[in-house]
Length: 386
Image 1: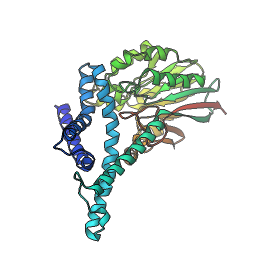
Image 2: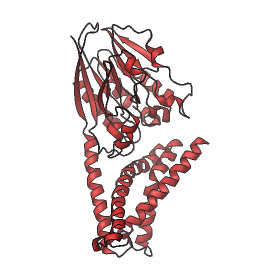
Image 3: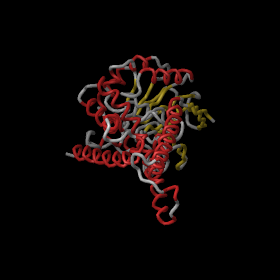
Image 4: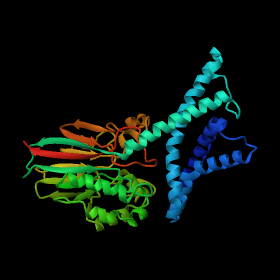
């Protein structure tokens, strides 16, 4: 019942936003009485519904048929955001124009109004320029380097790679992950940690791809460690975890792993464990997970979603906390206005009672393969003994 309500809400929202955009781009379409006008309007409705169509087809196992709808629909999500923003600004200006009676804003969004056509075309061109730039921004992740010192009882200095939010699935797959593998191996890390959302949702497209073989080609001294993100739970966390384990990844679900040179990795289950698709058993309190760890070890906490206010974490005595999830504040500007309200630290580093917490911008994208906020990244972290 909850999912039915959600789907109805999504359809209503898409319908309302789509209708608003249609009446703003109408001057660019052919006259409605012509075959070109009919074709362009039918095409618009198909594009508008593509993401939903792709999602439904994927859910029924029609992956090949789903792929083009998913890709087109994903791009159109970003298109909708910026068209709505820019047209809304113009509409506010048109309302102000009613008071000041400025002729340059006196027009109607109808076929044949050249002034309306000019504004509509300008908005579409501006949106296209921003999204193309965002596409190339997302296509070329950066490598960020962090270095910390510790007085903990580590037997050697070490280096590891943090990766989060890869979002492998219908949009990103083999070649995309191959490039990530090469970036990781170039750093020659002692180990790798994946802070959730390795999968974009349904794990089947990834399982049927070459990703498993590529995973096994990642070379480390002490392995790969991962936690679930919300997208593992949107898909099927158990299937996703079994796939990772099969290809050499240690999945930590409210559990710990100890490395031989004095490092303990603590992996928390994602908050989505309590979602309708989760197990509803709740994740363990952090205190109970770490009560038996060696406090002389350098401790690394993996939690896909950054803590809201660090109530549990700030007094834990852990050395380093690593998260992702936010895509550097929503992936598309200006969505960071929401993530900053939800999370105390939605991107970057913060220190709480001597514990360091870092929220990465992540490597991949959800929905449109576009980033108009921060650059995607992998993070190379070096820890040296004082």
